[in-house]
Length: 376
Image 1 (cartoon, helix red, strand yellow):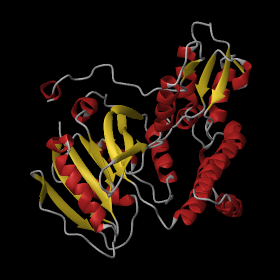
Image 2 (cartoon, helix red, strand yellow; image 1 turned 120 degrees about the horizontal axis):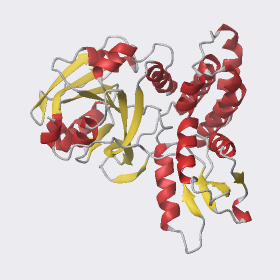
Image 3 (cartoon, one colour; image 1 turned 180 degrees about the horizontal axis):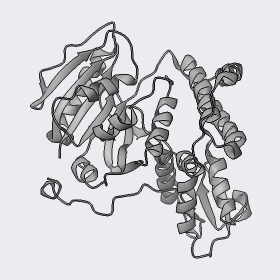
Image 4 (cartoon, one colour; image 1 turned 90 degrees about the vertical axis):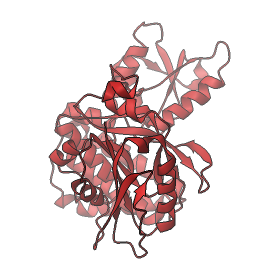
């Protein structure tokens, strides 16, 4: 099995150099067919090394800023055949030695595989697990893709400039009859970064998220999906210190919504995109014995409303944490968030404490090669 690396970089040559040095030291580079660095019209450009751990490196210099579409350019410019391409930003790098078995084990209908992503300092010191996305979301700057599938669905769209571009890409994956999965055997690290443009980023994200929901949510889901999207945007704005940023984005959405063309997903695909389908399945399995009938939501996030809906559809009574629930359900659908909170809750559990339930767990392939020879 061969893995190509497509790294999108802009204006951070020193950060890119650190990522290439880390890449040279990671076991995943032994799978490498080539490394392509796409320079997104940087002001300060880097001349990369000719090779990383004997894997050839090529630089593609863009003359206009393309953003995420730079990954599409990098995929088109691959010179050597590969089974998977790892799309990275300039501060993210694979880690650990599970990449071969993990990627080789997935069936052909899996187009994108997300990794378990951890933050590190500039010096490489580990910090914390990053939040991640919902079950069939796509992680920006750290996702393994099948190049042929990406070509077939048209890659990144030219519509969204924020993280909503990954949501739109995930929707196109679903419409093509393909899947996105998260595999916890794939480990990756991302250097922490503080952007001066966080305010503008939140405003743009809010406007684009509401626009995406307006265009693609099935009509019966539209009102509730817009409410959840606003809650998610407000939570992001609170993280950078001003909920007014989300309000500004919502105002721009209201200004533009008359021009937005509706193109709703089928209900079953929307349920998969939002995580509702995964929550139904996971909670149904965990509650199948019928012994647990009273639960409480704990560690609620903006996704908690989706978890609550899945529980109510299953006929479970939802109570407050102080009302002696039989189980606590983590109120999030973000991968890293669930894993972090599950391990924290389980580690601090005392005898007689309520059971901890998760609204979904990463799926593993049914057949996993046990050695490189099995995957050849």
